[in-house]
Length: 277
Image (cartoon, rainbow, N blue to C red; front, side, top):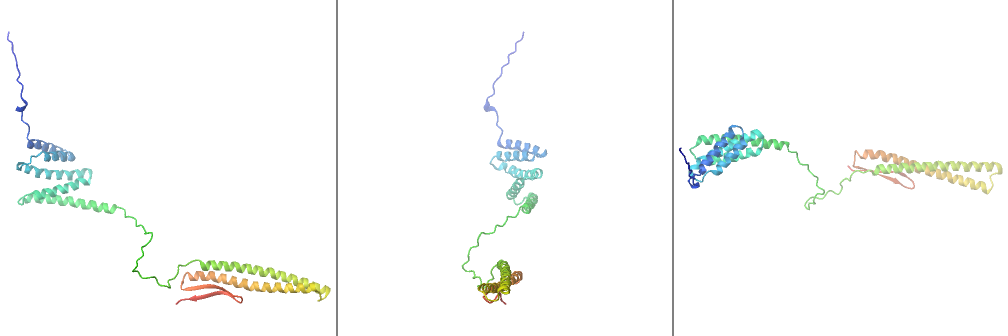
């Protein structure tokens, strides 16, 4: 009989080798390239950004930094083409610009390609800004409540025309109303006078021309007739004045250099016209 004994020897942790920063960055670069090839551009941006941060701070990693900046800028352009988020275009503009500034003067080919890509990105940004400006609503202008007084501003002329009001129209309506009252009063006194005169003539035919009652009736009738005549004159004048004022109001609205005013005196009722030339 054979007996086999197996023994295992533990491996010390300090014998394992840790991957270097450059090796970790290389793995992240490979993962980012896989995502870029499968159109996962945002994932590629994340992987390559981690790889950039993992690179050691030495000259050996400088060549990787420049390539990563250029690749991340290209991935940002592709990400904008997919989701139309402008932030990726702006990031691509900044990265291309940084890449061009970091190139050595003799690397003209890389500079030319990067400048073409930067120009295309800036053209897209200009078009986007122009479209946003065209779609932006214009702000509404608010009228100021009051204008500040300027001490040096010239004073307005003394003979400035006042704003056109309704004074003539109102005066014309009042004159027409008073004229109608005057004419109605005239009619009433005329009827009263005729009635008194008829009563007086009837008494004269019955009792003769003598008698206090006959004289009183004739006197009252004459007075009523005089009042009727006076009210007829005033009422007719006021009516004519009211009509004239209404007509003049329409004319004045076309020619504001004309001024009209009603005039009523014990012997005359009408209106006064003045004009400026």
